Picture (cartoon, rainbow, N blue to C red):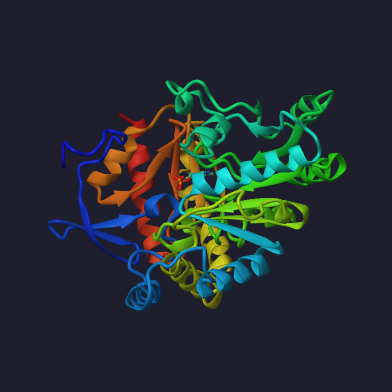
Length: 394
Ligand SMILES: *Cc1c(COP(=O)(O)O)cnc(C)c1O
């Protein structure tokens, strides 16, 4: 590894050079089973032939022009995303944080159009919205913010899953313009919404004329067993952001808006040189087409249940002893919460040729590919269960 890479990541001691489906191969051609998919990015697994073909064909034809001209792939992708989400208009960016930047800018301009001079967005504690200055300011985690003051103003943090806290924050505050949450908090420890939480946010936003913003950067694109996780609650937001799973590894972000929110940005108010370029949109179109053809939303839901049942069985004794506090998630966003910090499990899994992640210190997080077959799921369940048993019994 190079000394010339900025030290922003604590990296595991492995270099992957090749992938196929749920498998990654290191420089010695040793096989690893990937139950993390680059943090919910490669939903179709690695080197999916349809995405590879689309990238190669588009690269040979045209990589980049400019948003100064029409981009047919971008138009087709916008149409498709609006059809899937029942929303109206898309701004394309290159990452999740950038998609959220666009969402935040829309909310602020929406406020100014209502003569609100200091537009304020309600966000959640333990949320994660990105690493740029405004998105880290929106993020509900002081570790992400440490050292970067002064933070961007205009965010108000309240506890997730607490509707009273939101209502209290809105009372007597005429500056609120939007409520922004993740439909499942990924980095915050796989916190799922309580019954009706998202519906109640939707109702409040309708009543008060706020924008409801769902950060679906991790949950979107079939990951949780629906195209978008808000659909589990029957909720359509005013703004939804996507990124991770959208291009199966090719960088792309999208800020999708509906109704009044879709009309706010006009020429001169926002832009991106690379956003929505022909190559990125080709990768995303191929990703979506494959997911639709193979009905991977349904498969993710079914496979998620298979994982949860498998873990509940293989970890039954530790659940009984309250060492496993909870097994939760939706679809292929799976969390196993332990009663203790367990970040060591990541390295132990790597030693067993399995890629997993631990979030919020004590939650084992699995984000397997949507194309995972049951035999691979069995292997993941068996290794993770064995490692957790060893970990808590030593
Ligand atoms: C990963 C993530 C982001 C940031 O995406 P980047 O592409 O890393 O900028 C924002 N929100 C959520 C919920 C995420 O999981």
